Length: 129
Image (tube, rainbow, N blue to C red; front, side, top):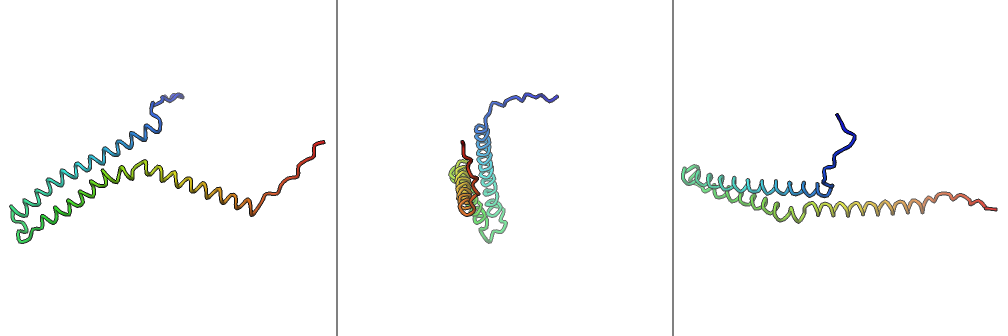
């Protein structure tokens, strides 16, 4: 049966946003650590495949693959630890607020221009006797 009285969760909207942001950051770091583990396992495996098992032994392709993968890992690392905090939720919020303020200013300027070009007829005031 549905009750008319809702239970309050005890979390306000700001706390909820902070929790969601924290969970998102944790997930990004977790994915970075997984990427690092796969990079180590895959890198060692590719070098072993190329050097020990002589797969494509005429060319050192494994170093190129590990190098490119390493560059991608560094990009992932920069994204998680440098760009994400710098261009994170706070930055998005401030950019959103700036855009909203700019839109409000444009709307106000348009209203003033319309009122100036097309003034509303004024009603004559009644004389009080």
